[in-house]
Length: 302
Picture 1 (cartoon, helix red, strand yellow):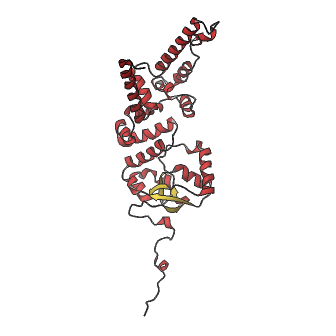
Picture 2 (tube, one colour; picture 1 turned 180 degrees about the vertical axis):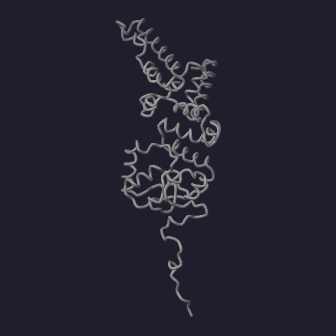
Picture 3 (spheres, one colour; picture 1 turned 180 degrees about the horizontal axis):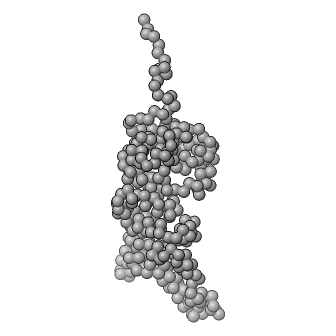
């Protein structure tokens, strides 16, 4: 005779909402959580308040196509084990977002009730691993502005102990880390210009050595028009004359010399400036090209 049928829901002692069940094992497949049960990453250095246009674009995509990529999260208890000081910041949320801050913000904007998540407890094994994962996503997946990068690097250096260790975590060079940290020593007005791209990093790379109140004035001096010598070709009566051709050559040489000066003027400073702008792979490619060019010159090849 068949036994009595039991309704499993009658045996439940936990809330039936899926995200309330915090797994004790590692997960790799996506699941669904209510948006309000996923707290924003308190250590995310990306300025979401100034990224409204991008978030609005993601929100519109979510309305049309749904969420195409899940957010990575850890359980509340795992996060508080390494960052107990942020308990107030995450409130009563069941999960804490590691990556996907803009996706979470877009889901809120789109008024989506749920969020697709992937639980990865390994990212909460240490403060260093958490900050490294957050920084890596922000630096690699889509460019932060340089000051946001600097804040992410600063957090990682704090947890790693040294700039060299942070550089290894990020796959960057130690000079790149140092130069990003130097951006945080700039006056707020100069930082704002760097963030918007009005001022190139190479123009602000050493301004931190000046008192904050002198930095903006020094920057303005660097941005003054070039010397009249550079426009001598425009003053030539006849561009076809030898004098005009020589003027063009002088202008080109002066332009190259000016570029070298702006990069620092010496091989060491030029290397530091380029390491701030280029990835390690790009730096290796540049070095190979320079060596090849030198070998070709010695061999008399054009």
